[in-house]
Amino acid sequence: MKRYLLAGSAFALLSAVPAQAAEVIFTDRTAFDAAAGAGLTFESFETAQSGATVNYPGFSVTESDGSNFITHTAINSFFTSATSDGANSIWFDDNGSSLATFVFDAPITAFGFDVAAAAAGTMTFSGGAAGSFALGADTPTFFGVISDTAFTTLQFDMSGGPEVGFDALSFGVANMAAVPEPATWAFMIFGFGAIGGALRRKKDMGRKTNVKVSYA
Image (cartoon, rainbow, N blue to C red; front, side):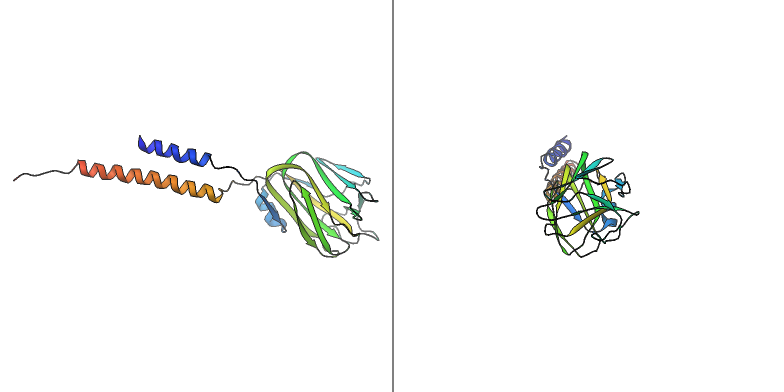
């Protein structure tokens, strides 16, 4: 009975560990795909459209606080980076305080795409995740994020004038296996140790009970 009580106590301790929001940033598509698992939606931006907001199945992209629209293109005199998938990509001129905002129809936990800029600089992102990464001139770079907290919006900014392009977008709900936090491991070790100690004590008591005493 004590064994079950201790097991229940260990489970209660594990259940009491608070969940902590966490995000993982990827710069390698293979690693991102492996971590996210199957089931993400893929968009290669082959449907021609341009405007302040462009709509694709499951999401939209808006350019704000600048003087240029999101533009669907292959390669032109401004954006010279080759597309990484299919024949086309989307791009915008990130001047002033321009922002490219991705808004998803339903909450997601995984987002990854190829991004390139006409000039080297630092791309910052905010919304469902926040941080920055470096971009070389006309060098498509993979960016991905997987979060344990669902989000619907991501904004990208590379203010200063370079043309920025996006292609080969994957998004959706990641199918990652839960990995215990360090605090959870500590509680697990404590719980299993308590169960092991109870079993050893029970075994020792059984040995003492079975001792035979001989009288001369």
